[in-house]
Amino acid sequence: MVPKHCPRSFASSWPATSPEDFCDTKLRHFRNAPSDISNQRCVRILTLFVCAVLGALQQTATATESQAAPGTQPRFTPVGGPNDSLSRARSLLHDGKVNDAELAVRDYLKDHVHSSDAHFLLGYVLFRKIQADAGGQSVHGVPSSGDLKSREENARASLAEYTEGAKYHHPSAFDLKIVALNYVLLKDYPDADKWLTKSVYSDPSDSEVWYYLGRTKYNENRFEEAITSFQHFLKLEPKSVKGEDNLGLSYQGLGNTSDAIVAYTSAIAWQDGARNQDSGPFVDLGALLLDQNQPAEAVKYLMQAVAISPEELRGHEQLGKAYDRMGQLPKAQVELEKAVELSPQNPRLHYVLGQVYRKEGFSEKAKIEFGRSEELRRDTPSEGRNQ
Image 1 (cartoon, one colour):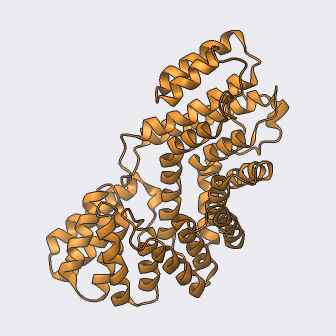
Image 2 (cartoon, rainbow, N blue to C red):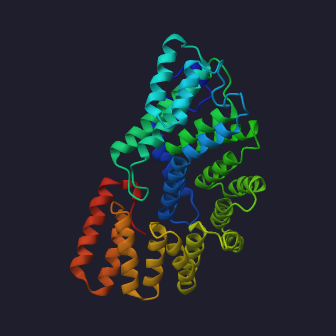
Image 3 (tube, helix red, strand yellow):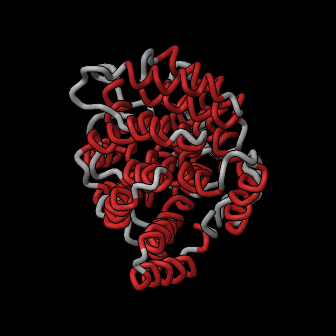
């Protein structure tokens, strides 16, 4: 998209996309998805992708600053001297004082309106501001309309600063990565794809860009390209659990179930004996087995998933569905009640729990859950109708 008030000198290279197109783009991806991938799973992947970006902002900043050689400036804000205002702003940002950093950069821009470094840094500060604002939000909950509005406004403002800065200097590979991740937060995956591709072309050694490019390709249903991106990522970060897990998701999206299972089991095996394990591949393998009508086998992996991440709703939801499929309704009830507890604003979970209550003969409880699901669905139409 071209952010509001962007100069046309550089904005001509930014695809003209209106805010309304973000929603249309996502729905178009759903319509083009293979028949064996439900809208429900697409929504889950989109949500996880955005959460992953929000959660990785601080890691991105720390890793980037640590890459700078002694005596040099971090590559995303190359400035003139150690005592200038931009260095102070960068120091404030490093200390987590995002609002103070924003004020410092804006103050600098009053007298240096043509500074590409300042515009790029302000764009990055606004991107980090999204993370700071999201810090108090529940990972599992549905963001409020106010939260979403603030996120979109900051993402657009960040893009506007990068556009302005590009009038005076070519953006770096890191700058292009942040531009792309702003588009991820706006759920505009075609533009995210475009700028991640440009970023990785400039710096093919940045494993993080390969990872996010793979996630973006996945969300565009371009599964073969997603596989290639994750393979590049895994060459740079061998035995990465999240990389192998996402490789499995991409194989599954392509309909290659056997390779997906190999990827999931590899990601699980690589964690054997580790103190801090990632429940992702356990959940994804369990969900795949459940899709293949193997609930008993799925339960084995899903039980491990909830043991690893007891506060992660996906494991509880899938385990509840597996127990439901096996006719073990009391166990299904327990797991789905836990899922609802973790994400009380999720209409889909209330609906699935209502189905279990109805099967158990708890008519009043079922009625309450169905009513709550309908009420929440009206407020969050992106959830769509339950499958």
